[in-house]
Length: 442
Ligand SMILES: NC(=O)c1ccc[n+]([C@@H]2O[C@H](COP(=O)([O-])OP(=O)(O)OC[C@H]3O[C@@H](n4cnc5c(N)ncnc54)[C@H](O)[C@@H]3O)[C@@H](O)[C@H]2O)c1
View 1 (cartoon, rainbow, N blue to C red):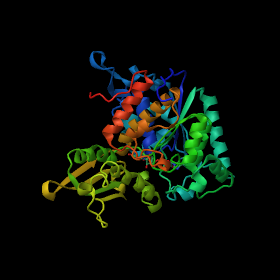
View 2: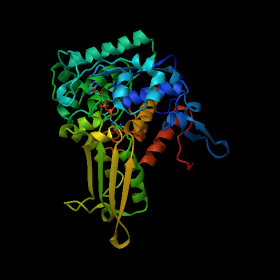
View 3: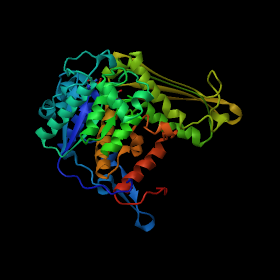
View 4: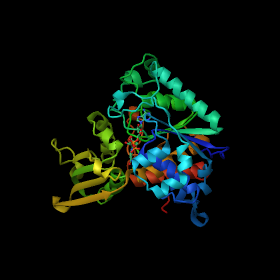
């Protein structure tokens, strides 16, 4: 299955995004502007990266589109759901990520993207208060209504294929409960029994997407498709799933920087990461139950790169228990900064004979500017994977994600090291292009 060459795309690609906020409006505006030659899709691997195919004298470096049959930007047709009725133009203006000069030339196309009513439950994001919301009898009815939206979107736009991407707010933390999330049968029964505690609205979107033959990508840290029941559904419907949580600012730095410490066998006694953020995402994450979801995702990155059990002298000291370095992540809502997040990392390392040193990283980033190219790449590569007959968890997409999905029921260890993730990405592209996977040095 994994080595199948991808079929060429036919017709248009529908991209249905859950949540039409800062990230989504920036993603859509960038694609529409790039199509008109008004902006460059900087940061997108599918548009810029070149990888090697072949070995020795036969080797050449090609763009992804010259290796695999990717959908073109011109073939994308957008749609969305949101709790608030603002169209993509209004949303882009409200988000204050992009300047008027970048939004006005595509105003008409953005205005045409009007959000469908959201499948929403206020208990999952207390700080949101919109009224563009579906009236659902129960969770099963929620699924049915979303499925109908997808079918209608396909009919109205005439797209050939659809990918569903979650770029909506982070939901409150839903711990995996084996009894409900352990099998597809149990999940369906819980949806029919309207079990609101264990079935988040995001699960209804995912279930609907996979049932309608659309790959599903989870851009927030929500539990959603990270449960055996959804893996079973993805196997059954032969659809790719990917998640969780876009790897944009601080975690990108962490998964790129931690390998430096690990590769040189330096010690780590603590890593303190803090952020200030003032957009709606920051507002939602100010709620402790929503932040918990993010915290779990952000913490997981380091632990599989610098593993205390493997190197107790280097990583086995630092916290209260003295069994591991101290690792803390904080996000504080601070409105004046809006989408321009500032992240500070203080890294306490030690060297020869245990002598301590410090590294400070101060990243003044733009959250949605970093997330938009990931949306594009995840969408195009999930569509490609589906055409190559790949289904279930797409581990090669871990490169783009903070908390890569993996089969924790079999104790699988996720790959968090950015450079190992890049090898997985390159090899998947090679295989889907009909080349052999390899581990040659470029
Ligand atoms: N920007 C980044 O760097 C980054 C990185 C990783 C993850 N994320 C995640 O991406 C998501 C989007 O971020 P953003 O800055 O665009 O946030 P945002 O608050 O601007 O937009 C999210 C939108 O989702 C809508 N929404 C919430 N629940 C919904 C539901 N059930 N159905 C439909 N719409 C719903 C909200 O009304 C809001 O308009 C967040 O979960 C965020 O944590 C962002």
